[in-house]
Image (cartoon, rainbow, N blue to C red):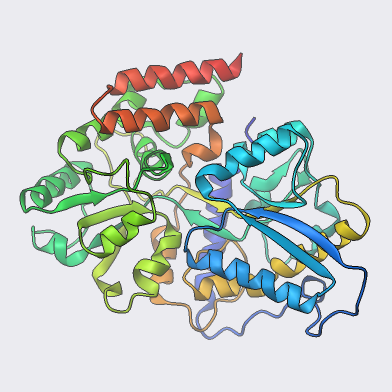
Length: 444
């Protein structure tokens, strides 16, 4: 079922919230912590200790992951009667592990919950605790659209920390200038010419780390399919009004075939992971890379030496496509769900933790680190020019993220298929059929 997480209304409203942040300016005072959302500044009085388990996928060295962990440490310092036992699980294994625990009714006390279709197994298994009784905590800072991805059948199961745009193209301005491009191409035809010129100059055009299979699917395909098939295509597929074997989607898959034949990607794209490719790009082993808005902090905000030389762009318009230029594929992330089994002191401790963790201070700290947030809080004085540029680039972002709306079986089919295309083992037509077969199996 579709919960409306990445529908047009969600991202349009989230973008509006982000523009409101920009309008606040750098001179705004930091938002004060709501009294019920912030723990005391003094350690709590001694109580019978409570231990809560938390499964998370904050294993990559992203700046926001470190910030989350530091915030949890601070909570425990302020609340010595509550212990958070964290289990750090790599993102590539996280979803599978959590789905297995849901099927076996052996959920941890707290866990990172992804929005949209990713919530289906947990809703179906009945393992989630609604947060409705404490949602007034965030009524002034989180708009309904930001919460929609975690709301099912009128019940709220988590709140997000950030807004991630998955399809940002980063490029070295000087490397493009050397082959005659002083700005990023506006059309796909011109983009192909750029790829050819970079390759002819001895440069790898686009660095991708697809070892864990999701980057080509989530980051690149989410943009390409939107440009060609249009924003509503995936929704129509789920409703039976369109098929992956339709000409538009085969054309979208064909982009990967075309770029592969032009040697646009690094030769080891399917053995290099998404973190390794970041350093590959920073070392100028590729002129471009495609990854999420979260990585902007590493590439530009924290990189004074080369920040100004790294530009950002969105995938260009494709001639004859049904999509609209300027859309970015985005999704809210990192809501913490609770097990329905929590009760008594453990439930009280978990609610106290959530109120502290998702306080206005969290969103301001994220913004200070260059992270896009879905919350209505004043923009910190130290907000970087790069974050403001990212907000401007993504202000029309309402494209769907493939793995936020498609079932796991279909996601596996496209991930395996894109690997096969980039290894010159299968055709777009073959992959389209495999995807539709997987979709038909889900519907039975």
